[in-house]
Image (cartoon, rainbow, N blue to C red; front, side):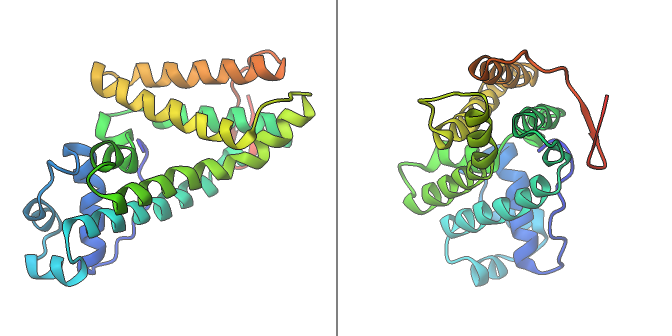
Length: 218
């Protein structure tokens, strides 16, 4: 995420290693990050690493879970939940995600998306942890999407599939941003998704609203 995530700043070696993994894997990839890199960044010994994690893959699974817990806190407290209308909440979510796409590419790309691209064939445990993270976040959108579709008379669309599609667009946008070296293409992908959902529901693309302290303010 581009804005600071409230990581657990515990002084434990385990917490330091997990926080180091979040940063380094987004910068260098999972395969490009060594145990030595993680220990150096965390300021701990290799003995401490293997005390908590029997292998680098075990650290990858734990990092995916840590990412889920950390980002869940960010999203659960975000102002996009405040609009009364469920479709407005969906649009506000997409605006929020677009806002997060800023800064250097490692600052806004997704840890689990990065890891699963590398490890889906070679580490079933990491693949499963990343899938759980991505699908778990998508599930938080399902209720609003389902209600919005029903309210606007949209049939034949599975809200679970559309929630997952939002994540596919985001992850694809991150890949394009890496390929082009430019965050703008990822923001454009989110904008196209917003237009698609507006067309699906038969409404104009909404003017953006700034959500401050739980209130709608233009």
